[in-house]
Length: 131
Image (cartoon, rainbow, N blue to C red; front, side, top):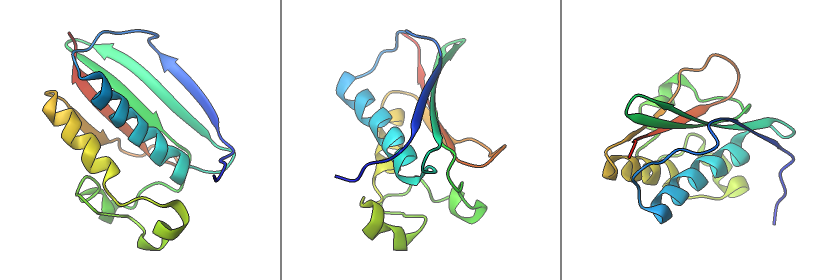
């Protein structure tokens, strides 16, 4: 097993109720965190933020990795799409993780998006309706 040297931080709400299949919600969050660990900077911070606004709950996972090039952004949620094919041997994966997250979000009446980069790294927001 490869080990990653990262720091996790959590901000926002400690609890909020959403109507979602527990296993699918767990899988979506796992996929987002797994990507942050794989592609984030070694020794960097991975943040998990949970916020509720109006009728929505937003879960954002952010890393301090190299970020995602503008030309790759429109294809990130396609099945089997990998930003850097050469990394597949190093990090593993099939290019399905973000496609699965998108499918889970849509199945629950929600969405997932890559936030515009304001600093180094990538931030993905998974949004679901509140219960």
